[in-house]
Length: 574
Image (cartoon, rainbow, N blue to C red; front, side, top):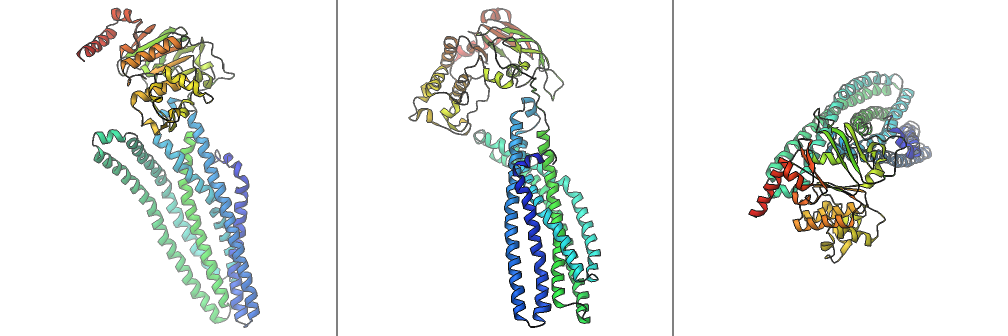
């Protein structure tokens, strides 16, 4: 928690006053049994109605003040606890935003979601309990013990037996609890993973009629979570009977020995009533302490998981005084190799090529030849393991990451649109863009033809993930969004695969005519999408098999020629 406590600074006032008001509430709760004993032993015994009324008024005032202090403490505790959780969630989310792709490979999406929601909520709950229950329980225990010994020290010796027994039981239960709570959080991750995967691909599930299979998979993980949760609950189930046995045994002992003392005249009836109340407060305090520590153990598991995220340093490390201005869109790969952090085998090996600013480079190769990995090195989504990647004549590691990514527009394979409007999605590329600039970008991406057909135009609603658009429409909108950045380099990672060849040709023509100074890198499966390129790289198993223009590769690259001929046969047969 030491790493997280600075995040409580914003709510420090609430964190200070919550325990103060809780202690004041405890004073009120402790005072009430004592006043009750005075009513019985003095007021009733002497039949003094005025005394009874006076002490009764004191009791009412004590109860009201205790209630006010308790409510205030609850408000301050909740504000501090859940505010603390909010700050942790914000800090963790910001940390994740700074992760490289390599960092994200180490955490599943479902696990990160659980950490940002369930784990942060648990830490907030523990923080609130630490300001209230963790203060109330020990103070109540100490003050109630003091009052019990003050009323009758000989009778209070019963606690010398009951308290150690309860302490031993609580210690045994808590020693078993932590690993179960940590395991339960992992089970939650597992359930969230199934939910996320299923809901993301719900259309695929339904089209293959695999609902029963998905339900069975979910049931298995859900049952595992339930089983682990039941193990955690069983600890409480064990604790409660043991606690009740000790509590009622203590009450019986107090009644037995206290009754004998009343008979002998050494103890008043009111004192016995208040003693039993203090007895209950003492044992309830121990129960609260055990519940707090149970939640604390669960919170410690959540803290561990949050600190795993906060303690993960991004693979992308910026150098001091980074360069912010990119001269042009020239690109150079100098003996570049790349290996994923989780792998010992290089995905890319000895990559060497140069692109002049404004050129168009096509990249083609079989599935698994690492085409996407190659271009992801340019905006530093990953860093090269060996060699250097240069943009504008400067190693990309010397640039400010934000400045670099502003000048390297990337349209990924998975076209993601965000819920909102078309205009809001376009402003991801330039938040200050005018409608005219948005329309111009849409025209270059051949998206204006369908956007202009909507009655609400740029205000047309985009559903989550852009599910109300076809694959080709999403691709064109994503290309337009990338163009809004007015980049020096634009990378299209198989970003026109869902559009027809005529529209694809129009997009390439628009790029050539209207973006002559922008370096364009196109990964494609269709040779028709890149045959016009100034140069084309053929990748094979992570290495450059050959490089040249279309005519050269037809004559010199067996892989390129084979791909071309197979696609030509497909066109002819179609």
